[in-house]
Length: 70
Image 1 (spheres, one colour):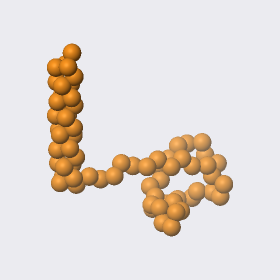
Image 2 (spheres, one colour):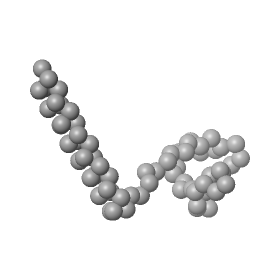
Image 3 (cartoon, helix red, strand yellow):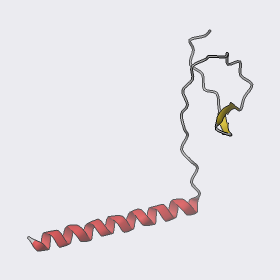
């Protein structure tokens, strides 16, 4: 068995990782599964950024209130 590292793309079907390319993985081969980040649509990215800005504004208000109390 080779000691070279390879990346073989796959997809999960019914809880089992199925390689997407023809590969000669031997039975008993040890593998690492790395989840790729999900693709985010521009609309969702915009909404997430708006929530982030709102959160930043809320923290600024809290900081201002705390400094006024002192």
